[in-house]
Image 1 (cartoon, one colour):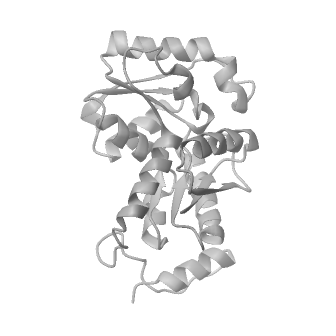
Image 2 (image 1 turned 180 degrees about the vertical axis):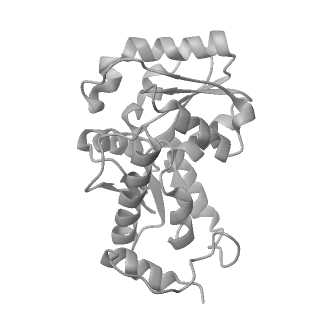
Length: 250
């Protein structure tokens, strides 16, 4: 089994965190291919940045999906996830959707712990889009400058731990979801230190991807996730144009 894991941000240090957690989580026979966005921002925390990240993810998926059994969009908020499902011939998974699915198997109410105050509104919208806003206990986030996006876990370990504990004590969270690729792997460090389960988005996405590949559910030919209809286009990167033309519903 081969999984294409895409970091829609430009931070190579974050890609290294994603890759390390993906490889620790994956089954022994699963091969991981990592790709980092060639353009965009260091980390996504606004809707517009998510739009840019979605296009970066689409370009990487179009260029590199051949030979892979599933694609993982490794940014919390899942930029471009639904759109990629229309055109990809294989399952496409996102960190948020996967983490929320895991959380729902472990408890009723979950809290999200994030790295930025600004990011909260967008995350709330993503949870609502997944139909789970009624199970969201809270979103708590760091409220301090981030000197290095790749070192958030080390630089803010105590504050992140405190946010998790407050979500449990004050918000009634039964599961903690650690949000964002810069926190990939932190759930392992917090294992046994909190009174509730802790969920990591990267590990959830990798394991859910393996499950979907094994189930072989097939690709939608009808409905809203059917391939886009054939139509004229102009100015698109070659790989995206080729993907549209090859998958156009006729």
